[in-house]
Length: 123
Image 1 (cartoon, one colour):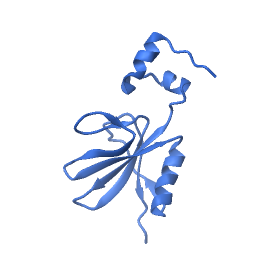
Image 2 (image 1 turned 90 degrees about the vertical axis):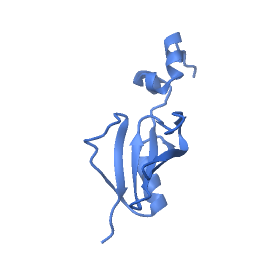
Image 3 (image 1 turned 30 degrees about the vertical axis):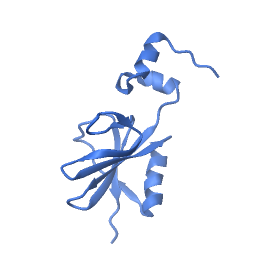
Image 4 (image 1 turned 180 degrees about the vertical axis):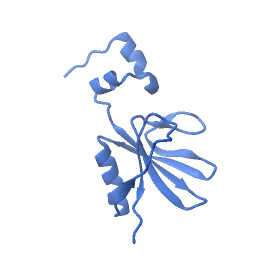
C-alpha cells in the first residue's frame, strides 16, 4: 500500500509537535510512549504514558528509548513505544510481576500525557 503525502505533511513530519493527529493516524503512528520516573531521594517509581516521544532534558531531542535526564533527583527514562496503552501497562506489570494502579493526572503540565500509574502497594 502506498501513502501519498503532500508538501505540508512532509514538512510536518520533520517536527513531531507540528505533525497533525490525522497524519499520524494516516501513517499508523498512533502509539503510546512509556516513561519511567524514579525519584532517587525517596526511592519511589511511577510511570507515565504519552502520545508522542519525550525530549531529553539537556539537548531537547526526542528519544523513544533510553535515559532522558535527571533534574532535582528525578530520573526519567524512556522505555519505548507500544501499540496501545494496554500493552504499555502489561509491559510494566510483567517486568515488575505486580499490578499497577492509575494515578490522578488532573494537574498535568503536558497535554500529551495520557496515563500515569504506579505499582499497587502490597498488604
